[in-house]
Length: 207
Image 1 (cartoon, rainbow, N blue to C red):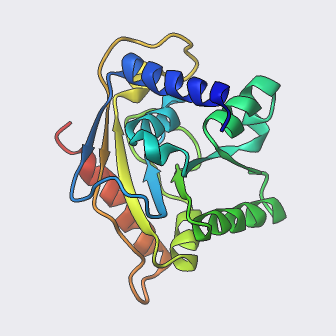
Image 2 (tube, rainbow, N blue to C red):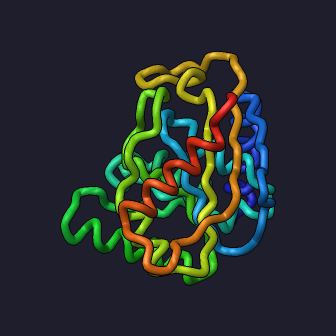
């Protein structure tokens, strides 16, 4: 990472924490250099930044947000921000062979020792509920059984920056990181995905 990119990353992390007032809570886990998958509910453009900025600085360069190539590749500025500053893994979401290649790139990244930030709902919700999780998380869990899957519940970000809005509202958000989970021997896909969704919801109880 160049000095300019490193400076931009530091400013972005600080600005994210300032705007959201985000508090990171670690429940039954702690930051780690091991390859992990952080998977979270998704309701705001701030979600990726908040998880990334909540991690210790030394980990951020080894944690790669998974982002849509068609959105983040639209302009030079977006692509620079995604690939240089955030070290995002851009994937196609067009379906078919593109989706298969995307899943394999996730596995390759984890086996290389980097971590991922995933939003397995597949799209942003309105913040009032957590939707059904897509099968990609199951595929990753099956292909990388030793990788820890860390559920993350993001609170209030959809109110700080709702869909369609450009200016944030000055209220507090939080990111709660839960206990690691793995695919159980013989566990069916739907059962695993329901358990993963429940892990996100459990972290949000009482907020």
